[in-house]
Amino acid sequence: DAKTTQPPSMDCAEGRAANLPCNHSTISGNEYVYWYRQIHSQGPQYIIHGLKNNETNEMASLIITEDRKSSTLILPHATLRDTAVYYCIVRAPSSNAGGTSYGKLTFGQGTILTVHP
Amino acid sequence: NAGVTQTPKFQVLKTGQSMTLQCAQDMNHNSMYWYRQDPGMGLRLIYYSASEGTTDKGEVPNGYNVSRLNKREFSLRLESAAPSQTSVYFCASSDLWVTGELFFGEGSRLTVL
Image (cartoon, rainbow over all chains, first blue to last red; front, side, top):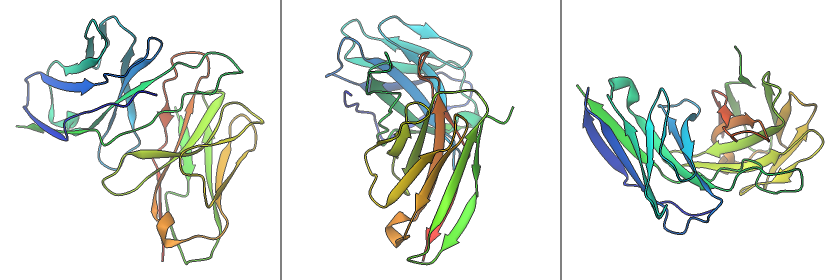
C-alpha cells in the first residue's frame, strides 16, 4: 500500500471549513484513498473514501487531484466535536477470495485537528 | 445496534500471565482484525481473519495468537504477557466484498506490570 504524508497538526475555528491535506505520491492505479478519524480514546471511525472522483457524504467531502498524488478532506462546518486525529490511508480494494489485501489498513501518525470556539 | 463489542475494556496483568481478549460483531461481516495502539502512535495490525476459518499475521504478530471461533467472534490471546504489550487493543470488522470500511470496537486497555 502507498505511503501517505499528513501535517502533524492543524487548527480550525468552529463553524469554518476544515481542509485536511494528504500526500500520496506513490499511489497505484487501483488504490483507494480512505479517511478515518479517532476521537480521543475511542475506536477509529470511517469518514469517506474515493478512487479518483470527488466524493461527498453526510460527514465530509473528499477532493482528489487529477494525478491522484494528493487529496483533501473537507469538513464543511467544523464543530468542537470534530476535534480528533484524522488518518489518510491508501490501499488496494478487497477483490476476491484469493487476494491478500483483505481490508488491511496501515495507519500513520495522522493529523491532530483542533477545532476552537 | 451493538456493532463490534470487545471484552474486557480494562485489564491489568503481571508479567508472564496469560489472557484472552474477546471480540464479537453482529454485522455478519466476513473479515475481522486486531490492532494495537501505543501512546501517541497510529494503529498497528496484529492479526487478521479474512474469512471464517482463516487467520493471517499482520505487522506485529509476535507474542500473540488468535482464534476465529466462528463468523461472529475473533479472539486475541497473550500467552505470556510482557510490559511491551501494554497498549490499547482494537478489534475491527469489515465486509470483504463491499467498501472495505472497517468498524471498530471501543478498545481494550491492557497494562502489563
